[in-house]
Image (cartoon, rainbow, N blue to C red; front, top):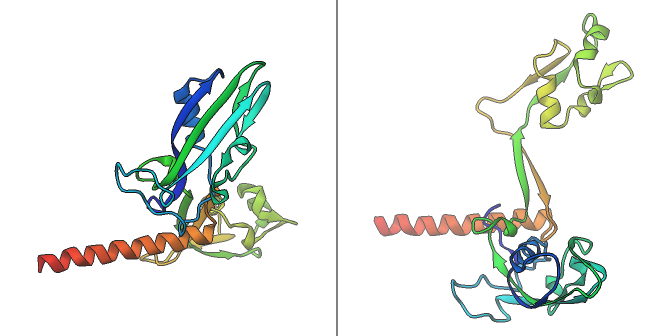
Length: 225
């Protein structure tokens, strides 16, 4: 998912910062604020390109303490680029401390910086699981299995549903048999979005980017021929 574009704050223009954080630390925290992303609204800016409404969006911050500054205090010029998690804490301001700044967000990808990552993506091989609760001495064997997979004195197959539980149940006893295709052909993918995009949008955009990369590769091969 490193090539799925998302919006993130890229630069800030600080007019006033009396907080306990240096400008650089404040900029770092703002850069990690998840922003709603509509990949159809903005274009990926070219390197060193000038700011424009087609590629950039500004968010302003003008606050005075005492208060806890959160992502919800950022005021976007374009509501489609508002913070996803408004209660994300930025900094604590004391009496007579204030912050005034303009933050500029743009599209980017995770290969460039982790702040543009849209999600945590993982996968594992899908096993074939067989549970036999009629084996001899089942009661003596249940204690060797994770308690999450045991209910009412039996092993519940549907509860063996995470990579950790699958590993913990493998080769324990003849009550559970776990097998894999050779070669492996079935996988279970998990997408945990940070909020900029939905899981469905992340997968759709990843496939679109992948198809574009295949077309580009095909063009390189054609040039070699």
